[in-house]
Image (cartoon, rainbow over all chains, first blue to last red; front, side, top):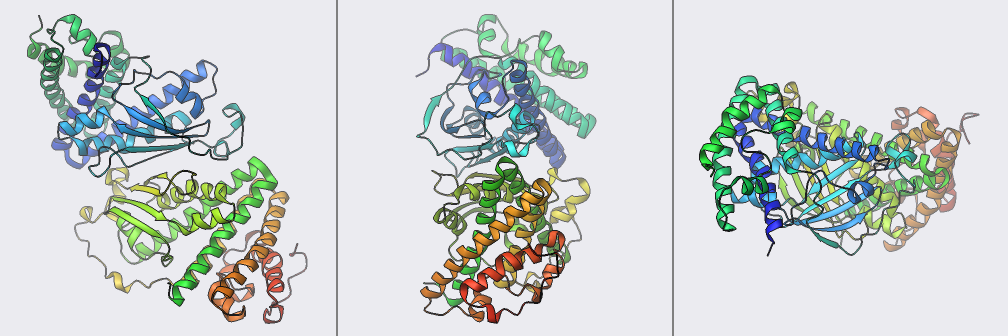
Length: 296
Length: 312
């Protein structure tokens, strides 16, 4: 059982997963192989951007940007309590963990989008650590939950002093001995820093910008259709969430359960999205969502 | 029970595995973090060389450069029968598999070289598989038997058409090449075990030597010399065990069948390709001659004199 506060976080997390699914599936179905390329490059861009930001956050705080400090530190978004993971090793150079339940994979599977989710899994983690380490770390992921034969995901990240210049800047010890796996340290969810809203706009921006770069107007048209589908699906989800918690679709409910404003994205949108992307949102998302929700 | 031919493959594999473990241990023990850097770089160079060679063979035979080809066509080694794999997916874009038994990891464990094996797993596969597909393969190896606590190795190696530049897509995937005619794979010659391990042994050693000298200069060369001498002693022990297990004596014929390289290095033309840093001379002086002596085979080793100044 989750408490009401946790459920709000879960609902916001689902909005990010749904945004990806709707935009990616329209790009794939309308633009074929080129659409797939756009989706992959967009996820890579999203992961790299988040990884680079994570490194910069640590550097700004004067903390060496190694794997331990990354995992110990604050995230750029809250961690959904439905994530259940077992951490097997966490050192400056090695981070190993397994994920047993993943709300992103669950949503994608529930909406027949596991294959599209798999594209995300293929790219995101590798790109994140690429951005975090400027290409020096190695992120490996196998046994993904988006693959029907697997019942967990396994992540192994290695960031070795030998593979960078000036390692003493980042690592307190240059000893590369690999730690023994510990008894799994189970965790559910995580911290609550950061915001899903920022991630929502960042993911949207990466997908729209990549679609336009690769496919020009055809790509933007697919994104527009994806946004319309998203608005309809999102409205249905929000109505369901409201019913599940015996509340109505008030502005207060939406502010707590949906990561962005349903009318415009304000400063974050201006910071992360181009003017054209904002126009896409206005024409294909905000207006449709507001109409679908018929907000009180 | 293994056949005689399988036994030979096993011997060749173990000697090759020990070469890596012992040379790298010596480089890292003597040279610390810069040694570690040299070992990783040498391992990557070896991996890239192996990936490039495999790619060239495939191109020469009009085989598409993709994951199915990489893992099923014209391997540069016959499979060691001790390897046990559970293959979950093999298609042009993906190879997903679990390695349940890895004789390389077993040898490294037996000789206390697990940490060195860990470096191999981190660096080799990535470099080799990536280079094979023009640097575009996504290599994931998240569980490894060289990681204490992991029971098996988990590979997920992926090459998507959209990871490749447009001009390479027809080179890698038949669906992008409308006039492609599949080659007759049975016409590609298979690799003989001795030939395969001989080539790998020389190239692996060569790249470790090259990186050690590049990063460490004379200290790196000395570490390799020391590693070769240590390898000679360990190899003598290993060969004696193998011969005893088969109830046979160690003679030239046994060595020819069970050890990757020929102790008379002048007989092997591959050394003429990998000449940099006096690679052959170092092996001759610090590995072949001591090993022959330890095994009592000096008489059988007809080696030409080493030119002055090239020996240690």
